[in-house]
Length: 169
Image 1 (cartoon, rainbow, N blue to C red):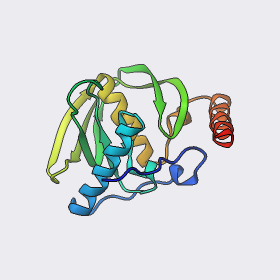
Image 2 (image 1 turned 180 degrees about the horizontal axis):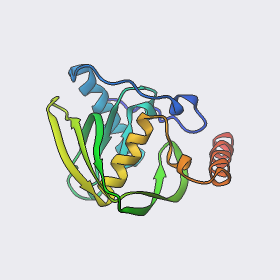
Image 3 (image 1 turned 45 degrees about the vertical axis):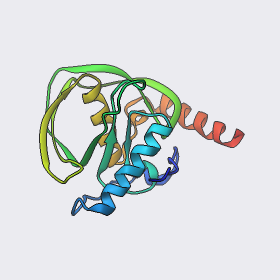
């Protein structure tokens, strides 16, 4: 396993649509292991492969409390097959937009289908923070950042703040 660099705005790769994965093999599992290690070190609760410069439809996530046992989840080629009409606001942040947080409205519940770490097809419902996180990470796979759901002014301010912090570092 290896720590990878997390891309930040305005890196153009973050706006690229990720390609579907053909097969879940040892190479892909190694990528997912690296992603998980990178996500934990950041620290974050979700990470899409494109955020480390690999435009593939792969996500890792762990919503367990930091002090408890790790409960990693792996999503290959995830798709939302149903979303509730009911929406819920949630304050989101992103490892690719560090230190910026804002409220985003998303469907409160979703049903998703994906391949897991072993390449098995899983279909399940998500709600609460799980629903928020999977939708946020799936947006990354389509080149959408959470700040793209905000007003143009808020989005421009967020990008400027990240650029300024990067230059100061």
